[in-house]
Image 1 (tube, rainbow, N blue to C red):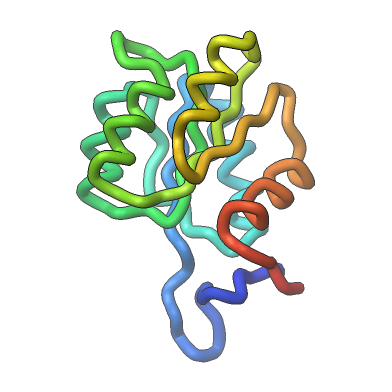
Image 2 (image 1 turned 180 degrees about the vertical axis):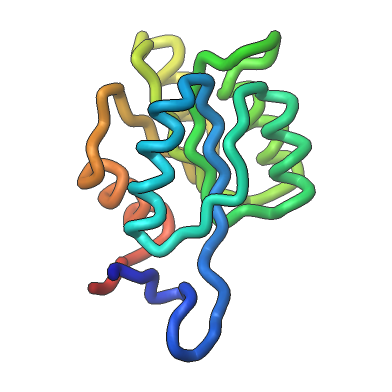
Length: 138
């Protein structure tokens, strides 16, 4: 199993890094969960509303967030990330099928953010996690 150098669960009993998934397609959300678990994360919640993502992130202080841009409700993923960033310094990987220039520019203004276009695969997630959080060891 691959684990982060910075501390996943292992023989020493350290906690796994925590992740939130914010995606309104449950099938994709479960797929992303398998990717994150392969990287040593514990997925602490699946959410579909931007406002819920903000509240849950502030309550749980995750180590990583995977965020769709188009979410259910009035708040999109970029607005939710902006609100989260006002309270936490957490890396966010945006995953979207809608990759127009305006959305990419909005994401580029955020600290610790990456942008992936759907469909995505495990290797793309692994690379972005390493860019944002550091190397993963086998």
